[in-house]
Length: 268
Image 1: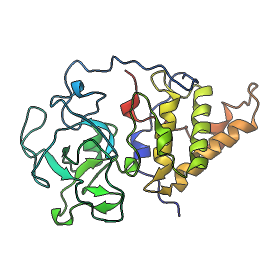
Image 2 (image 1 turned 135 degrees about the horizontal axis):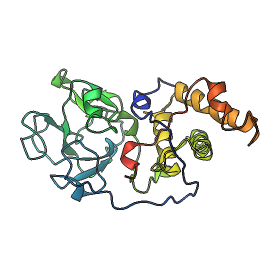
Image 3 (image 1 turned 90 degrees about the horizontal axis):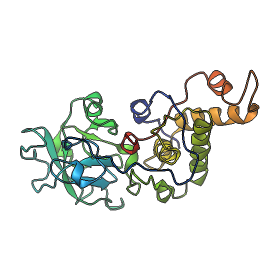
Image 4 (image 1 turned 90 degrees about the vertical axis):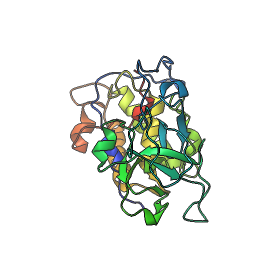
């Protein structure tokens, strides 16, 4: 049964303002390091981007700066990248559901930002989707924590980690080929109609679309129906004329098409 569309869709709803590249192997700007090293919880591309020297690739979410820890479910020590009590040492070494697949990531225990609201998370890293008790595939990791909440990105859990430079998302498709093809068509529409900013690559748009489409092995009804409306309307109108394949989808679908590109994959 299809579930509710994630809060992630709100987080990544970006204004469309430019054109895109329709090639399968999009050009990548490798000069992505920021002038100042990033703090714990902020997005990154490589270890050198982070104050602590660790850019974690895992299914916890798009790559972000962190550091390893050993005192699981305790606050991480204060450091140059985070203040005292600002982070929590989460552990995926023991999962709440024995039938769940093992956590896929470069670390099993790592520090993540504590939070009181999703907006607090997004203010430092737009890739975060939620502020909640630590969970894996919907199950709380350590129930006795009470209401201690951390920044996280649930739609990435259960999927192989994806490199935000390559956006090699095809390995995450599993049995959802129809949904993956729908995302390809949707991002092709965005690209053709110049709804993708110049810094957003079509391949990365597809990755973000698929993450919004399939969350914890459930296809999201709202997102599915929304993008299918744009695709079908785009196909029903001619390429040019007063009513064309680019002018009519927003009219027929009653809104502005959402660009689902994950912020971590946007080239500066």
